[in-house]
Amino acid sequence: MKKILLLFLTFTLVISVFSGCGKDSSKSKKDESNKINYSDTYVFGQDMQNNLFNQEYNNICESKDSYYYLENGFVYVIDKKSHKCQPLCNKTDCLHDKETSDDKIKKCNAFFGYAMCDNIAYYMNNLYYISSRTIKDDEGEHSVYDFYKSSLDGTTKEKLMTLKNDCLYTFTVHRGYIYYSCENNDSDSSGRCLYRIPVNCDQKQIEEVLKYYKYPESTVENYYFYGNNIYLKILSSNNNKYYFIKYNLDNGKWKDLNKNLKVTVDDLVIFNDKIIFCDDSYTKLYECDLNGNGKKKILNMPKPDVKKEKYYHPYTDGRYLIVTSASASPNDKFMYYDKNYKPVGTYKMPFAFSPYGICGSNAFIYKADDGSLYYIDMTKLSDKNKAEKVYKLSPDQWVF
Image 1: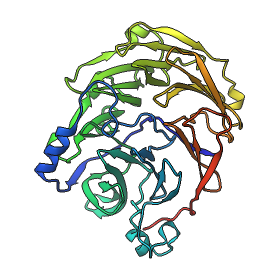
Image 2: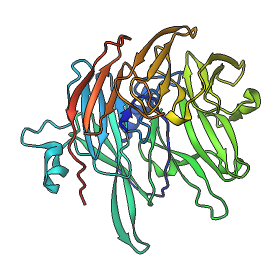
Image 3: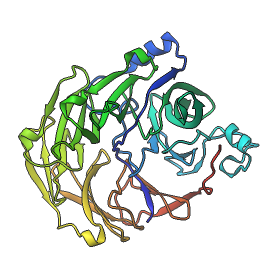
């Protein structure tokens, strides 16, 4: 099945203990802090890019001019105007992902190192990523994960901190903080906790975002940043119950929105300052305000075809509400709706994609089974939009 990289962001999560931190001048810390816009809406360049999503990992991000795609340790930059794609390296004597020498691969600006997952984030004109390595110490052999900040051209990289453990998965950056989750280390309980640390890596300021004990043996399955809030879908294995939580990042107050909604929230998106979500039947779409009030049904979808792996999911590119009719068969539809939920067009995909295939900010980017990267310009809604082959990725290369 072809792997689609497209655009929203969900978020799975990490296990770690901090054991190091890079340098960052007090002046740069102050400058970054002064730039943060704390308005309660989406702010490009400083907020988690919810419209960018890959079903497995968060391996794509965007600046105003380009997309950055991380695959097998290499970053590829795709220009939004020309759609030209190339490794993020300007060295004329470098073969980039075609190199066969481990030493030469490590010297390539486009090489960001390997990890259990490919994960990259854009924040205030820099790229953030993780790289893993194996070490031996008194506790034995295990993995450590290094957090880095890179310039947009890949020429300058700075190690920020090291996470010491064996299961780092993914992270995001939002309004001055790196957010990550990890398994609870309390032997009497299990589940994932959500933490954050300032982007300057001051370990003294690590804080738990939502206290674990409020939901015993719970796992954060999905969350969505919007403005100064996080919306979290939490599963408690203690009672097999889902909670839909709104958590305010400023004052630490949280609210269980399920009490008002009285329906299990599955996939969700925020569109036109409303929470749009489907229930667990995947056949109904609802809206409510950002506090979970005023719930009403907005769309009915056909009954999902489980045999064809067909389900319906809401997404947005910022302009429209987009509902996927996703299956393992080609030519399924992305259905576009305006702010009044009136249909404005459909787009039949020229390829097969998984039930979790997503739409994106004016483009679709996906990788075919042969490693070819394709780009579909969706600035204008039209079934005539063609899939452009923009790059052929090399086979997996691992550096040990």
